[in-house]
Each structure stands twice: as structure tokens, then as C-alpha cells.
Length: 383
Image 1: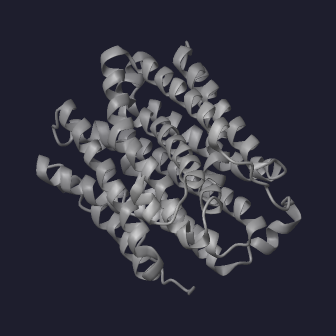
Image 2: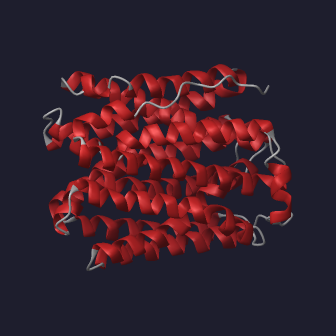
């Protein structure tokens, strides 16, 4: 707390930020869980890993399709009411996932969660930046990114451990309990925050004439597609190609998340003074981590090195691009612009997972490594 106070935040600011950070933790834990438990989920429904991976694709594409219409609809609501409703919907989806009797119903339950994801990630960074003074905006956004990274450090390995010990259904139930607790906390500490001017679809063409946004969106789709072509199948890839034991897979995913925290910290410290170089280096870092993916599976040390660079640069890229989006949109445009960003990012997630599934099924899981590297950084044309 004292560190935050030294940065200039009051308790009325950091308490709701802590709540948003916890929500980012549980939302991303839920998003990553099928990746860490993909083999077990596939086995319980007598599916292959590629078939089970379609759950990731369907849910990601659900977020892509739903992000913009849901956010246009949700722009009429005061932010606190919207946030509490979204977290409640998310919690219901988790409990439904825990009791589902068939894979099809599991996908339907995950679509409930996809609706919550679509709205939450459209407003999380915006709400964080509005809770503090403009000079603390990057720090506030980095706290949301830290919650996402902590999900990879503790949430994914813990969820994987619970799933291995008690079954994957219990993992979904535990996340449902945590999200319900987060809703109660936010109801207590989160301030009322007007939504601002309502966004209409008629304003969308003007928003999409923004060249900085278009460049940002194109790079986002390319990066997310390459990223999730590999990440969706990282668990079976490390086990089958690298011969890595299950415990080491969990540890390597923890390294991934720890370095995501580092990426979040670097963003908070470096981004404001080095925007363009930060954007370029983080995107290039993801490509450098993914290009030698198959070779990196040769030893435990190289697996850890790949996960470290991948986790750090991936998180830093994501949060930096959200900061850029907020910078280049007005207050009333930012929620819808962020929902488009979220939708396109999930387009990349779904497409990457689908491409990875085709490669795994038709060629072999070892070959997924040759499809993962995102396109190189584009020339940034904005200042």
C-alpha cells in the first residue's frame, strides 16, 4: 500500500483498482484453464486434443462476434452496475461449466463466460484509467495487466493442480466461487462511474477512419493469431515433443506468468517515455520467442527461456496496445474502440487455435511450431 501511496494514489483509488485486478485474475484464470487442462477435458469426453481445442476457438470467436454489439448495448449503463452484472454472469457460467454433462453443453456454458469476457475486457482498462489522475493512468492499467499475469503465475498452475487432483470440473467451480466473492467486494468499494455519452452504430465509420486504430487492429490480429496457434497447444506440445514431465509443464507455465508480471512492471515504468520503441520491442520479442519453438523444446532450460521471453513480451504488448487505444480515442469512443480491440484479439485467439488444431490433426503436434510466429512489427505511423 505504501508503494502505491508514494505514486500518488489514495485508498479510494487503489481499493477499486485492487478489485479490478482481482477480476482480471479470475477472468484470465478461466480463459487459460482449458489450455492447462486440455488433455484431461479431452479424455473425459473421449475427444482428441484438437477436438477439445475447438472449445477455445468457439469461445474466442463468440467474444469476437459479441464484443461490439454487447458494448454498444452496454454503453447506456453506469459502469458500476455494468461491472457487477458482468462478474455475476461470469460466475454463473463457471458453475454451469462445472456441472455440464456433455461437451456441447460445456461449450454453451463457456459462451456465457464469453459474453462476460467481451464486456469486461472492453471496459477494464478504461475504468482503471478513470479511477486515477491522468498521470497515473499507465500505472492503473498496468495493475490490470498484473492481475492477468498473476493468473498465469498462480491461477493456471493452481487450477491445473486442482484439476489433476480433483477433476477439471472442480477447477471451474473454484473459479466460480472466487468470482462471486469478487462481485461482493466490488459492490462495497467500487464508486459510481457515469458511462458517458451513449455510443451509436452510426458513429462507427468515423471511428474506423482513425489510421492509428486501424494499424493497431491489424497488428493485433496478426500477433494474437500467431500467439495462440502455439499457446493453445503448449501443454501437449511440451509433453509430446519435448518429453517434459507434467510437473515441469506446470512449472514452465508458472515461469510464463512470472515474466508476464515483469512485462507489466516494465510497461508501468518505461512506456510513457519510450512508447514507439516499447511497442516495437515487445512485438518483436514475441516473434523471437516463437520462431525457434520446436528447437526450444529440446531441453528444460530452453523451454523455460522460451516461456520467459514469450510471457514478458506478450503481456507488455497487450497492455501497451490498450494504452495506445485509449490515447487515440475520445472518452465516449474508448469503450467501443476497446470492444473492437477485444473482438479482434479474440479473432486471433480463435483463428490461432483453429489453425493449430488443423496442424495437430493433419500434420502432427510437432509442426505447430512452424506456424506460430506473428508477422514482424509494422512501421508505426503515429506519434
